[in-house]
Each structure stands twice: as structure tokens, then as C-alpha cells.
Length: 49
Image (spheres, rainbow, N blue to C red):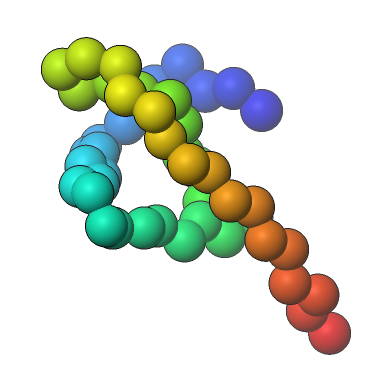
């Protein structure tokens, strides 16, 4: 789903940091701040009963 509204805030991650996004969280991946850099992305799915 795509939204046209601008985000209220951004979370800027530095080297060594990570973020956890839940299925209900909106996020905007692949945004560069100053210049493009390589990013490692890991996706893990956990079964919830």
C-alpha cells in the first residue's frame, strides 16, 4: 500500500544500529541522507500463535 502523505518523523540509523518493524508499521526503506552507501538487510519472520 502506498501513502501520499509525508512522514511525521524519520529514524536515522547509524553504523551498528538496527530497527525492528512490525507488520503494521509503515516504513520507507532505501532513503539516503547524504550519499548512497551499502546496506545489509535481513528479514526474519516469526510465527505468532
